[in-house]
Image (cartoon, rainbow, N blue to C red; front, side):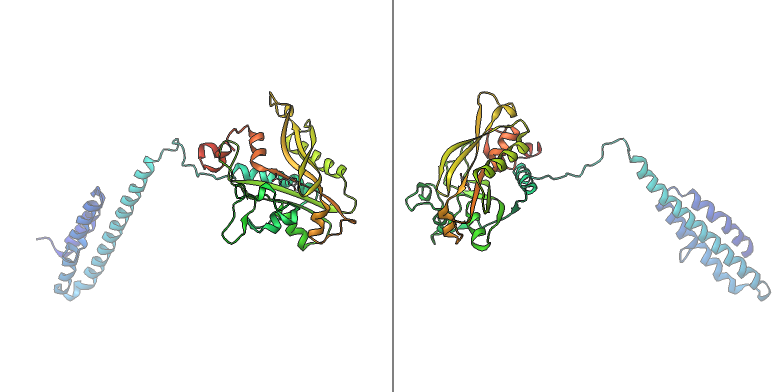
Length: 334
Ligand code: DAH
């Protein structure tokens, strides 16, 4: 029978050996229970200390404590080694040559991009952005814009009315009125926004689309200012070679009124020499009267254009419905 001293020295060597040999966490746990567990070898040996002769007790007690500390340190070290081995196994699975997981990056809708481009050109000329409500009344959409009571645009066929007599605005020209009603001249604004019409939906018509309206009011504003401003705008938007043509037209709220065509050749568009792009004119004196401006003192010009149409021309898009379908195959191209 080995002495207590021999047994302690033995454990101090064997336990670390067994811990090192443990291939995984389960084997290590078994070894731990064997040596350090409540009924394990070391605690059993410690119990025997009490039965040793008092002369040996100090020396053996010290030896027992050293053995216990050494065994514990060996266990901790092996446990750490096994854990780090596990993570390095996971690291071995990591393949730096695999493609990474890309974060999907969003972007602005092509209509928003077009609108921002149009607005930024007018901002260069000192225009600021104005906005108005999509639900309007007949005053702001028609009466104040000098549109007679029997004008076809007011017809149920063309305009979406609410039960209470209000309506969804059919044009952003409403914003002209709202701004002039609340601000004295000079005025220099662009008003982007959605408008609504009872249109049969097809490749070039939508019941809801986007317009940009412009208004400049001051003393001594002339048709030359109108032409100069819009010429500059279309050259900035479509390229320096772009030519514009102002064709006489009629709008209730301007006199004279024009439709603007631009030269399609500048965009490489074949078969057509001119493409219609916007409406404009000198603000009708009746419009000034309805907002309380003095038409003898002030003159101004106004214009309006469809953002979808501009985006379609710029990008060669042939169906307006693509803007509203949220098909990523379409949207990702912009
Ligand atoms: N409101 C017109 C439309 O919806 C566009 C327009 C034409 C606006 C002439 C104007 C303008 O302010 O002066 O087609």
